[in-house]
Length: 210
Image 1 (cartoon, one colour):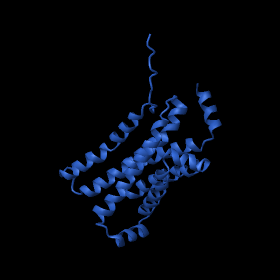
Image 2 (tube, helix red, strand yellow):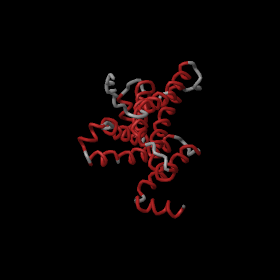
Image 3 (cartoon, helix red, strand yellow):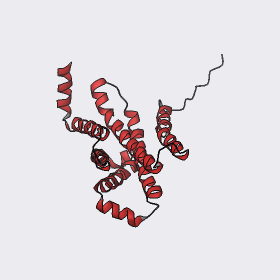
Image 4 (cartoon, one colour):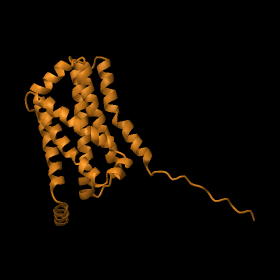
């Protein structure tokens, strides 16, 4: 009998295609809103509407990133493989939000930009949040995790400061306090409290609920 040659199988990351699908789906809101603006369907001020939509999606992706742990702790749903993609999508949207503000809103007038940063607190907070997101995005890879070790975990705790700043930025950006930014701020506060709450106490609380 002829011996069968051993089958060589390439190692593939399981469900990696779902991560790429998440990236593709994640950019659909930006593409859709850009199309609406290009076709005159974003109202009287399409640039401002586009800018605000991008900023809102940045906050939404940050919220989804922080929801990963509570979902695992409360419902046993493990979505950790998607956390990096969600965090990077939040960064991309924040960067697009700033780019639209700088290029389309301010027409690359850096003098006006600096004046806005100095006199408008919500822009100052937004710029600080974007600056803090840069090192998080640059180190969102396996090489950085191995290289930085425990320092990587400490560095990426900055995301809590970023999302808190995002909530304040959203609240201050509107002239009044409509329901939407308040709801976002309250939900972010709950997520931050869950993260601050010691893990042992979280487990004890969940056991008591069951």
